[in-house]
Length: 167
Image (tube, rainbow, N blue to C red; front, top):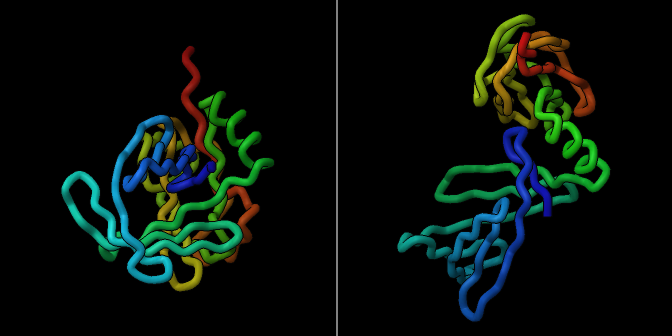
């Protein structure tokens, strides 16, 4: 299954081995054991540490809470995957779109600005939760199509980051 978190895509596969499970993330395997406590709530033992994990899903996302830390993982649809893979293979451009319709809280960068991978680009509010979108590549902001206070749909291109071309 393909999932997206903070503009990065991950290939996940769950494996069951006797009483233990393993999750394979981008070909890296993590073994753990778990017990179902209640609907969608698990007690997980990983690397000698025990924690409670809550998992819920809807048509487009998984919602995970691990010890009070919330994570939203977007399901990548087949048509998005093929487009995303092409873009990813080029590796020279990142197109930033909101994860869901919402309001722009703050644009953290400007056109022509150099950014490093992991730099915060824009803050979006949806359903009373703020989400910071981050750069997945180092490069230059070539397009800024959003302003603070603007209402946006999930298909709007907010920003574009392109790798610098060697001269």
